Length: 165
Image (cartoon, rainbow, N blue to C red; front, side):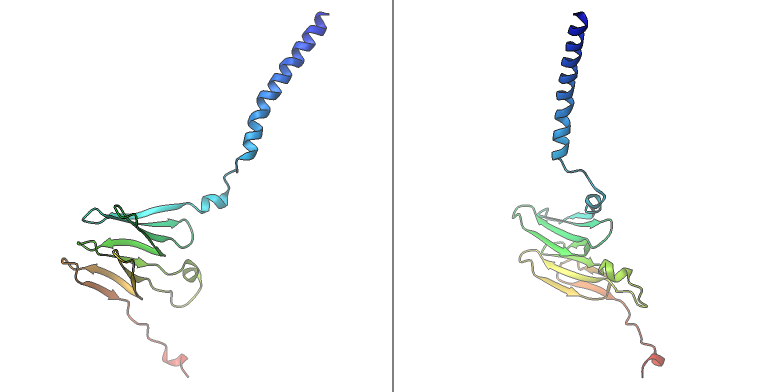
């Protein structure tokens, strides 16, 4: 009889343990596991800047591989602008413009071409969101009064005369 009670107790404890450990297994099945593909979607923030008047924030959000984007956010007006492949944002002193480098597409950079694509420049007007694009820009800077932008273009590649005609 004592053996019958101990076996009942053993079965009772086993049943309780099964119920306790079965509960976390059910909740683990409802959560999606973190995969390598999920990790590859993570983005890092680079080049974060705040405008001189403190009303705008800009940064580049870049994945480990692929094309990133520049994000420009208004603090008071809640406007958000995104520029594909934008990086290294710079505000004018009066915060009316933000300039940033536009990187070439990642696929184009990986292609085995003789001439690699060059970065460009995009100027974004913070009040309207309108943009102006300039290709093949090596560097740029704004004037102290925010009225001008100076930029240095890449030298045009001369085509090989032997390959023509």
